[in-house]
Length: 206
Image (cartoon, rainbow, N blue to C red; front, top):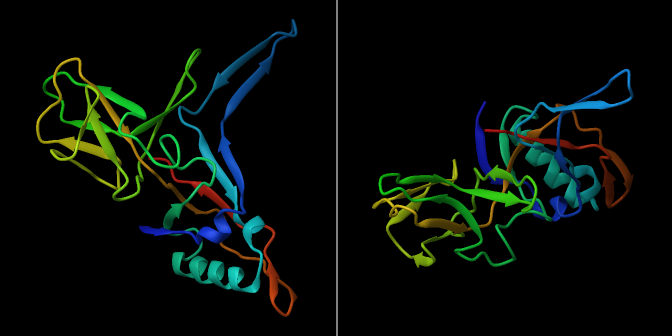
């Protein structure tokens, strides 16, 4: 298997449905009280791209994409129309705090924080969009002195950020996914229209 750094047809993706999934065990005790246990550290996103197919041309593009990925075999990039930025349409270098300098650490994982007051969720970002990442240390944007690996989301500094300095980032990102089926069920509804009600995709977790 391999990962193809190519994005699923954007016109189709913007009409799809889906979102994050969690795995939680809920046990009801004899008293009626509940015990709950979260089995997954990170949520996993699932999508159905079938809702985004609006024309025969859309279906032909999806068919070619599916065949090139060999069904479930190879992963690819997916643009989640609701959640693809560190903050706002144009990322800023202070959008997300990804770490604190200690004077020796030079590598930091891009991440996005959800929530604030009770139990914020820190989501690793492994597929930033090339050219979209902006970095700042202690509130000052850095235009050089760092690199980012777009296959892992790890930022490397040539000089370690100073002890106690906030390391922040802004970025656009895609979701690494694969098809969750080896079969496309396509219906030609008219001369210039086609449907595939179910084209399931699932996130590939690191």
